[in-house]
Amino acid sequence: MEHFKALWTEENQDGSFKTSLQDLSTEILASHEVLVQVLYSSLNYKDALSAHGHRGITQQFPHIPGIDAAGIVLNDASGKFQAGDQVIITGFDLGMNTHGGLSELIQVPASWIIPLPPNLSLKRAMQIGTAGLTAGMAVLALRQNNIFPDSGEILVTGASGGVGMCAIKLLHHLGYRVLALSGKAEMAETLIKIGASRVIDRVEFMSEKPRTLYPMTFAGGIDTVGGDVLVKLIKSLQFAGAVAVCGMAGGVDLPLQVYPFILRGARVLGIYSADSPLEKKQDIWNLYANEWNYELEAIAETINLVQAPEVLSSMLEGRSHGRYLVQILD
Image 1 (cartoon, rainbow, N blue to C red):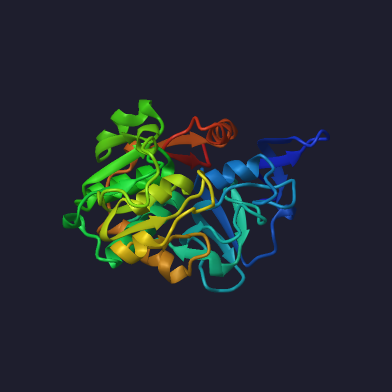
Image 2 (image 1 turned 135 degrees about the vertical axis):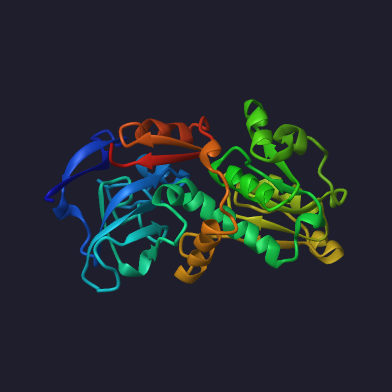
């Protein structure tokens, strides 16, 4: 195969960027050990940023975005994998400064690759993707900090996004009582259907006058927003409560005094899946193949590469929700 199809993000003369489906030469692929035929990918907010020229994500253009990929090994110069092996690649530099998974082919280091676990399909792996991997790490962190279903209610912020919806589904599957925080009123019914017991409007949540501490309401939380929303959540935790933090769409500053930590034993658990060790990623994928084997069709819409640029634009504009599975081959 000398040519392959992929999304191609290039800079226009006026400094704007265009992402479109192109036929490309295999000569542009990186000289890493493993060549993989991609069957499925997924869309994440990082992909939207890369596809619109964000140099904090991708420094050199033209470029193929896509931080997720699942497919079949064609060859491996390292000898670690055999042709025909089914594999998952998420995070590391894929789709950032290495050509990514919104493509028929990728060439990546063997050290980025996880063998597909038994009982998990390539399609399901990409319905989960980086968003589900992140949500899984957040849920596991809560459990490791003794936040269990009988501990009390869990608040998920940014609930209509990919990580938020994956977290709600997983927490509900594991028996937790989940509250969803969202600024999209039109998503309330969907969030209830996928497992939230109640939806809290973000404006209403943030309308209360700032206080040093709020009533102890939540046993834990998964925060995909950051900023003032995270501050209020921390101040609203029950004694020894914990919040897993994995987003910053609402801001990176944390104007917060130490009172929740000293007076209530609050814990903040940082979650970052992209560069996590393979062993940690493998643990999460194994859980999704077994104990966490729940239905994902309700939150994952299937699209193709032609449709992907429009969806990526909708992500930046705040018009998207849930997960987008990209079927690479028609």
